[in-house]
Length: 412
Image (tube, rainbow, N blue to C red; front, side, top):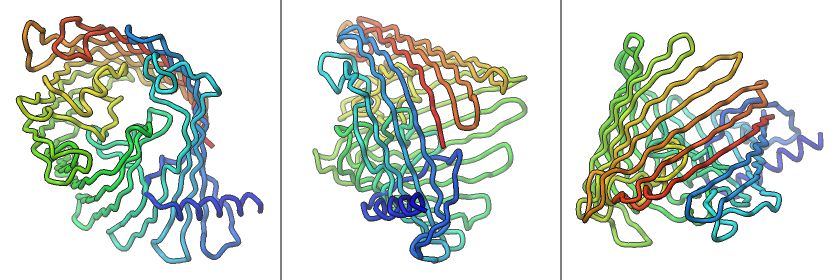
């Protein structure tokens, strides 16, 4: 019963803290009876994720980080009101004193997992009919996280203080609108106020075709409007996407409204046969062309894009002066007996040049292996090898960058 009281107080305190967060999918949730009339059907889950990461950026001292994420989440019905619930999550990240990496110590390569603790999610949900409202600090993973994501790869995820509505009244369609006032990044230096509106719609036109339209109005970046078609025809999975980014219309408290006029394109084809995965893709982010910046995605889960080495992390998040093209291929195997193994190859190039610089922006090879010992315990090993081009017009592409990871993830 002491456990019941503790978890009930945790959920109540998280609600009082305010904010908005979306829970990760529970792996092993445990209903706990409660004596309190305020909370009912209390459910909790937790995670211990331990990781070793090595980074060598050819400029700073080689970095090593040994970190652990402890996460505890709790959700419950509230006050016995049908459709009303509360959810909260706390995360603490520790490095056990092994701090030979930036930002913990200057002069080392960056590993973006500093020691930190935070109420990552704390929100109210209310659902009536086919409309749901969420108010508070929440995670957002929209589509494949190309524009808005939780950056779940890092030990401290990205969350937002937001007011979100979703509706499924139209058959085969999902409509979503959200207003974001604060961003809580993977590091505190990436957190702050924002004025952002998110508009998103999905429509399953036919079994082989889902259509998606979106608008991301970010005051510090610009207005992004786009459309995407996804589906499967015969043995081929496909993605076709295009977007435009224009001048920001919402306020940016930190600086004047940026000017931007850039395009984005993506095409992706993949197939799976007897566990073997093959795929090719091309992604293009337009250049600044005299504006404040080119096409950027500051709220994305950027580790999923342009290679695991994160060579272009800051470039595609905020600056992108010369544009970036990424042609890449993947090959892998997925099986329950031996786990998953993947290899990726990226070839990068800029769209614009200046002076004697070249459009070549380097290349990268990524390797990934995962294995689940059980539903609760998983293993991951990953490596990234970015080969830079010393004369590239993009500064971020001029140096070699290697990263290695070994990770155990236990959920309860």
